[in-house]
Length: 78
Image (tube, rainbow, N blue to C red; front, side, top):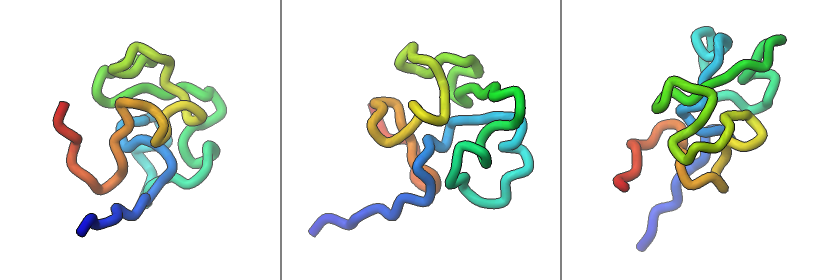
């Protein structure tokens, strides 16, 4: 029997911004992810490019992306 994982946020847990330091819960909207600068980065690469070498952005860092890591779950093995 497979257990279904509850998705706590539509965004990758490694998507970071200045606002991330003040979050008390996983973000649910783009506005909760980025501030007025719209600057964000990947916690894994520490850059504006993710491990897949694609641009880090709230609209792109979601479950469909190969490097996506959900909130509250361990990093998947490669």
